[in-house]
Structure formats: structure tokens, C-alpha cells
Length: 49
Image (cartoon, rainbow, N blue to C red; front, side, top):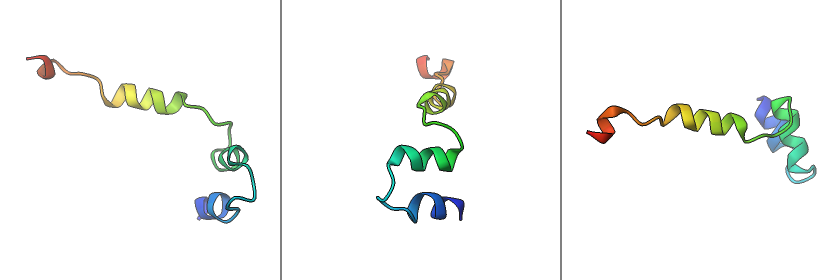
């Protein structure tokens, strides 16, 4: 419901950067995504066998 109220309801009436900040409670950043990708897709020894 928070997503609906914070992101969908305002539509294009507010800048995206403001909507993201209100929804996440922090400024936007690619760092959490980059960290998740690097953790999620670590190569394993089986890949190189």
C-alpha cells in the first residue's frame, strides 16, 4: 500500500527523484543494487570446471 500511495498515486506530478526518496526514506543510489548483484552472482568453482 505504501508503494501505491507514494509512487503510483502522484504519477508524473512530482519528480521521480523525490518519489524515490519518499518511498525509500533515503536518496537514490545504485550502491545497494551493485552490492546485491555482486553477492548474488559470485562465480563458483563449478563454473570453471
